[in-house]
Amino acid sequence: MTAQLIDGVALSKTLRGQVAERAARLGLKPGLAVILVGDDPASAVYVRNKVKACHEHGLHSVFEKYEATLPEAALLARIAALNADPAIHGILVQMPLPRHIDAQKVIAAIATEKDVDGFSVLSAGELASGLPGLRPCTPYGCMKLIESTGVDLRGRHAVVIGRSNTVGKPMALMLLQANATVTVCHSATADLAHHVRQADVVVAAVGRRNTVTAGMVKPGAIVIDVGMNRNDEGKLCGDVDFAAVKDVAGWITPVPGGVGPMTITMLLVNTLEAAERTLRR
Ligand code: NAP
Image 1 (cartoon, rainbow, N blue to C red):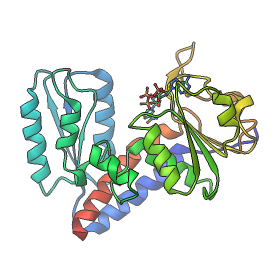
Image 2 (tube, rainbow, N blue to C red; image 1 turned 90 degrees about the horizontal axis):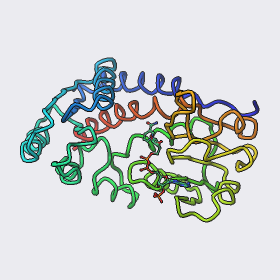
Image 3 (cartoon, rainbow, N blue to C red; image 1 turned 120 degrees about the horizontal axis):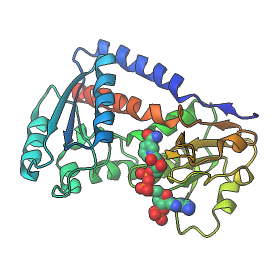
Image 4 (cartoon, rainbow, N blue to C red; image 1 turned 30 degrees about the vertical axis):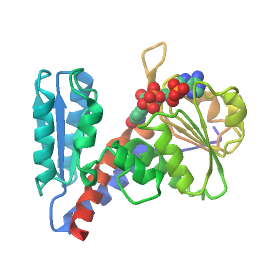
């Protein structure tokens, strides 16, 4: 292995420790409200982990669970109440929502200053315009992982594979803001390998294993693997052929233990930053 491992578990631990310290100094307890509608088992696990992480790091959290039949208007009314609640600095509605609820309408109902998922059109606009604001947790975590290498992104070529509103697009904008030259690839990209070969930084956010192979990676590149897939043995794996790419890359994130732990960590960071902004206003 030539690549240095970028350890998302260790970085998460450091950042969570900093969140707890900053929260203790703040003079108020940053508060996160997490709303779950329905009985999706995977969503229940994600929500439980988010609430647990809050409690472990000095944040106040409120968990609200509703039946899948909850009317859209009732959910919107709850969000309006949480928008007005001074003890709550971040609001997260776990996706997916039942089909009768318009997810876009729900996301838009969250006050921008409490949009700790960073998914609203206004939060996306702040990011696109280079304005301060709350950033989507997964790409924000990827930026922290890249920063941890100590490599200055100015003038580097970054290739993002994937253009979803939650990962690929905000990732590309954050890299642009850090002065990288950015290429975004997607399912209609004609020659993916050609683009990835030019990259000093590769971020793979596709959801298909072995999308990035050793022959596609420039020696010494930083490789960030966002993908969460299962291999033939049912084990969790990313979009990158880790076993082969680790011998070419300069830095690489593992799956599990890379991007995954950072997502909840950045939710805590966003909740803290939202509370800090409230105090500054
Ligand atoms: P998504 O909405 O399905 O987007 C996937 C993107 O990949 C799309 O833009 C798609 O292009 C592109 N794509 C598909 N096939 C491709 C190909 N052959 N070559 C190049 N691009 C291709 O997925 P997502 O929500 O962004 O998530 C991506 C992956 O990250 C998933 O595995 C997801 O589970 C994982 N993820 C992990 C975390 C974490 O915390 N670790 C968080 C979020 C997501 P088109 O736009 O043209 O369809």
